[in-house]
Image (cartoon, rainbow, N blue to C red; front, side, top):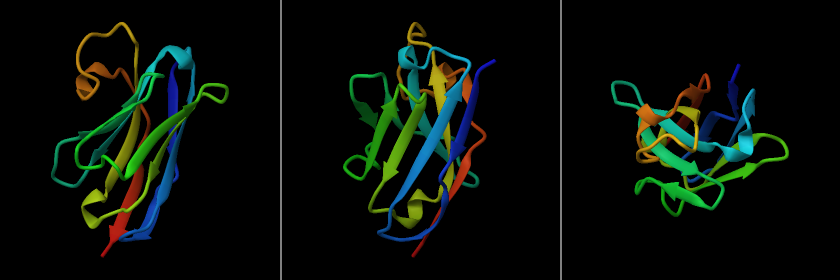
Length: 124
């Protein structure tokens, strides 16, 4: 079965950087659209970034600060987060969706597979 394992979260001061990783198994990784979402306490899970193999798509709130990338040889997707702000504090989840699933990459409902989440805390 498909398994996604998130890692790399932690506590960082505002302005700092973190790199999240998501190791995937049980799927033809190179064909899948891989995304990152986040959920802060009391808020809806929201789109952060996605990559379909031809470059990334980003939420306006992270554009210019976060970069999504993937290593198809290692079945891993990354999220490099620079210039972190306290409002970036959340549990971050990677997600995978089959390329034939219609709809926007930003919608969490089109992603069938999810990681367990990794906590990112940014102190001011």
